[in-house]
Length: 494
Image 1 (cartoon, helix red, strand yellow):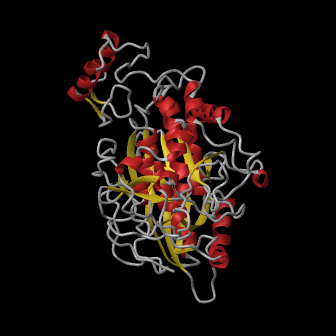
Image 2: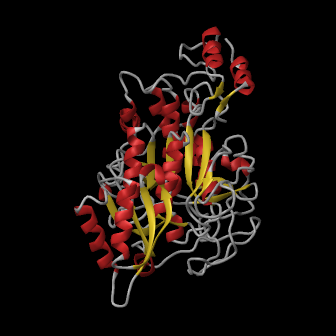
Image 3: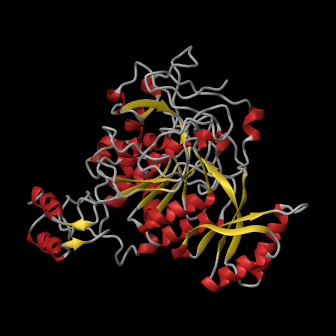
């Protein structure tokens, strides 16, 4: 049964899929008439376009990530031609050294969009439940927040957008996000009123990015959120625009890329971006998917440069919908349960609750939300170590160092889930135990990490006065060291 999205005050049911319908949606589709290339030089791009134009029509550059020599190119097939011939042409150009790589463009989606799982707003769920949901105790957030709140860390939400004006997010969302899908502002998380993917649902993933952002805020309340829109209001994107969003986030100070999305196509542009992120000390976190299967794998979750996340229940059992795979790294809460005897009303005490458009809260379930918990957990650990990179942990080892902390402290899941042995990562993250392995997060304004905000820190801040995007003296994360940052420092003096 399909449901159109209604206003927030109404109840939106979770649509179930039969096994046959689910498997029909497992493989992400090709984006017609689009290919991607990475070239070693501008001259090589000209050669590539010329060679493709000799075989196919309509060869034109549609978009680019010029700083990475990566381009989105259109083409049209002639009569009797197939995409196999396009791939053969690209492989020939790779063999000649004209291309670093070339590939067709494929779709990527929010996991919940693939399975038509919609958020639910119901009368007995209010803002109070957001701050008392079961995941708080399961993750150990009380003790964790005594040691870290994520201050100084930027988490990019690559998703449908984020409602920056939401009461739970207004103080967390940075203004310098980007939108690679529509001409709307980056932080807008709204639909266009059309069923763009033809599945009988209208704007079904509106609110997905806002919901994810609320969970990041719950776990890492002092981290900043950078909204990067790479999915439309149906939760659908494509490899090129997702990759472009990843590069944007890397270039604009993100420490963590939350990718509550995935594709069954292993794309070179996303692998390139994830590998670059790792070398620059940025952690990429990807959702495992919601089809309860081992294969096909979802990427970037199963990419070696990313953390892959499965979902578990409040009892640490694999969530019924969660994918599983030996390439995954962690698990986290992602399941919501109905009230006994109901198939439409969720039990707030047993549910994942977060922000939804319109200023309210709702219930959802999926690996996307387990993913958000892990991304925010990464932010807590990163905030404990503002001195990284250093001699012990160089930039390209920051992700590995954080992985080690989360893995060492994770709750083992094999005994509880024998059918999924070693398929749910190192275990379910335990943020109380993870933060206990590191120092207490420095106070805002403690720029030299000596535990005191004083004259030495003031000297560092004044020495950084002016444009200073990404430096630790930018305490307000606005790209400028100014009187606002001085106010933060003085407010924590001593």
